[in-house]
Image 1: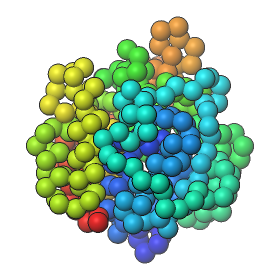
Image 2 (image 1 turned 45 degrees about the vertical axis):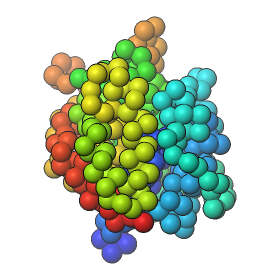
Image 3 (image 1 turned 30 degrees about the vertical axis):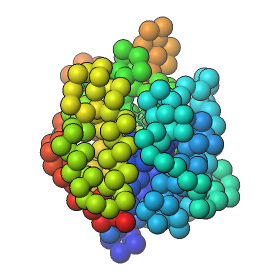
Image 4 (image 1 turned 120 degrees about the horizontal axis):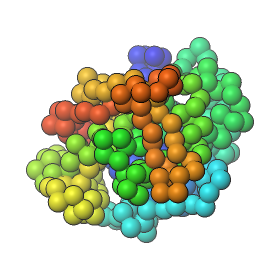
Length: 317
Ligand code: BDR
Ligand code: CA
């Protein structure tokens, strides 16, 4: 910890509707989380839009003091995969968008990460990964010394009990850059995973979304509009009241880890499978001799999660 007991974090993200909610969630908890910067990556929509959307979201919370660095415009090896069918052409379907009030910070996100993490020591920074893991993978390859500045990586990605959302076996963030995910899971850095197993328990039901809207502030209204729009496809696929909420579970874990449970496991990433590219291969039962490399969460107290989200968002404009 530093900054008067606040936990230093960097959010690496591809906003993206649920990414936007996660950023607002973190900003609402600024008494506990010290958001040092946002780094953006190509994912849900191309990099030019994710870099723009991150700044729009900061503007919603009057926090344009936080720098946004644009990172990798494409995955390490493969062609880009995007998700406009979920997040809309802008990446933030469901809400009106204005031009960002601030420019991007100078320099590439990967260079920023390297500098910030190497120089952080003896402080360590928590990295929150909400999109394809390209930026961190590139930083690890370019400067392995960044490990010393990382407290842990807390990421949304993968699935085991709930397998895939973009293919039958792969979750979007891992599928969009499987080689990058393989670098991150192979890095030896402490990793906490919020997979589909957890996010599919956190449904944005009508009642939960109404509670956010009833806060009466701008952030609550925007989040309610985003969640109503985002839930559509997935709630239809699964015939549920509301869609799963993904990226904000990362922030909830930082604020209240006791809401979640799981186990230490070995996770590897399928980078060659004909039908299973991007699958997270989780040794849940311990049937291999591979050492555990991640805390894999598989349960969340979903009512308390939405209460925490709502109580935190209440503090924003
Ligand atoms: C993940 O994929 C993206 O579309 C969401 O923003 C989230 O990070 C869920 O699979
Ligand atoms: Ca995301």
